[in-house]
Amino acid sequence: MLLHDPPVDFARVRQILQGELSEPRASAKITFVLRALFTGETDTEISPRGLVVRFAGGGTIPYVSEAAPATILALLARAKICPQGQALAFRLEDEDGYALTGIPDAARWVWLVPGEDVVLISLRRPTSAGPPPAEPPPLPLPSKLKKLYAHLAQPLACPHCARTSSVYRATQDAWVCGGPRCGQSFSPPHRVRALAELRDDAGESVRETTARPKIYR
Image 1 (cartoon, rainbow, N blue to C red):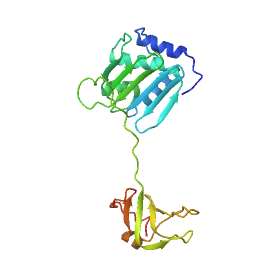
Image 2: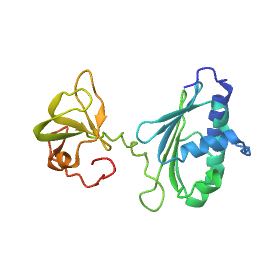
Image 3: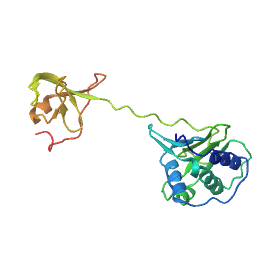
Image 4: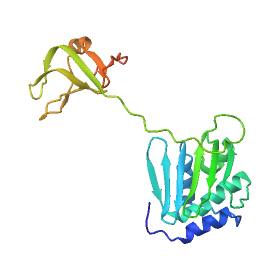
């Protein structure tokens, strides 16, 4: 979070969530924050220190809290809701999200949870018709990409360091030498690749379905 934001912005956010509404003002900063909130599924924390948007998969964007009051006003105005200090859960349709951000496919379930030290905003894509459930589902965790290894019946020499091995790390574009002083990638001969068995880091065999004639030759 940004540590030098004026706390007056957070105080204004809390006033809005107590029902002190006004017309949201349009600005590039507010549009930027709204577009960030509507990028897939997000959790946003607003505090006296600033504003942080967390994305599905683990990415984050910190932002100054100056735009937070108008951002919340825009969400509430679009939903036609006047809060009274309580937690809110409501639905915005595609046309609502598009009007706020210009992003298509922008229907979202929205949760607003006020607190003394932090205000939470969660957006999720609707999975059914009607209003959202009482609480948002957790953001999806980052997917762990499995490493792939090419296992050879006959050892192959690395063209860079000449170290021979019967196992090479297999990336999308090449094989990678596991030598402690090498680690360079290369394109194995097609006949060698064709005889190799691909296994993931759990030892399970994996079928390679994408031919790459421009890489392996």
